[in-house]
Image 1 (cartoon, rainbow, N blue to C red):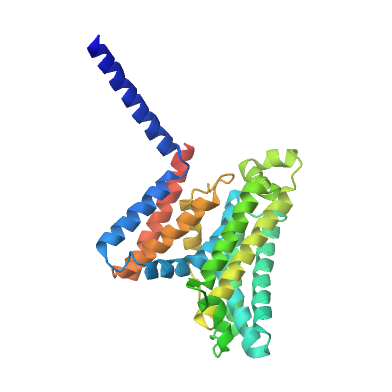
Image 2: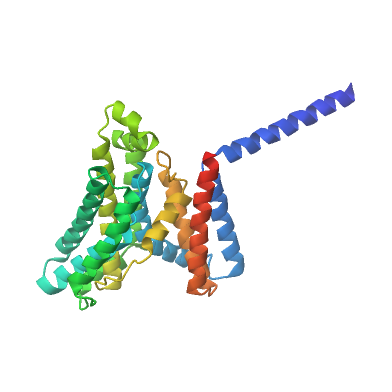
Length: 329
């Protein structure tokens, strides 16, 4: 009898342990939180310069533009689309703001605003081509990626816009207390987009459109308007990133932000946003952004050569997409 009781007690413990394990791994996107923890531990062991408060602030400042653009990209991908033009929009918006300030004496806040609005116009063009002309978003934004980058070079004639007033640098290099302004902007937009996706009808409509576009249409949703709006938002977010980058560089450079779309898309997919649409959480996207930043920062501290960094970033993107496909199967 005693042995039976002990056996039963052992079985209960095993079942309880299995249940806890199940609950742990049932947490949505738990893998990226584990991966983030492992990265922090790895780089902390490998270099003493990594785990410091000042380096953490540096990482946040470095990923601020990626984060801002990723929040906009997340809406597009959740709705069932993709935006590959964000890097080019960042460059165009920065070039416009710098040119207006330098050549035409436009007040700096207005110059930044016009540059950001130009990003919104690019997003609108992407949305119209994808929804009205019915060109697949990946083809649309692959084309506009090149067109917008070309426009940025045309505006500055292939040159860099230098000689900006000192106040131009505040947006990209300034601080509020010990927190960089770009980091504060990223946090504000994270909170705003989190509320939109979790508490507003517009956010629910984005999820519904990405989950099943036909069902969304039948239920009375204006799918064309929703898809166009998310592209506009993505363009505006990239425009804000462009204003910040131009301010940080104290110049307008058409060649900036090349490959940024890869970092942004990697952060979004790493964050568990399904490339098929209809699924994803913004807090996980933020973790994806942090992973990209920590990975880049740690590799720099370890003196990993740039071309190896590119290989690793590409591998991380492929891994994230593969995991997304496997989860569906």
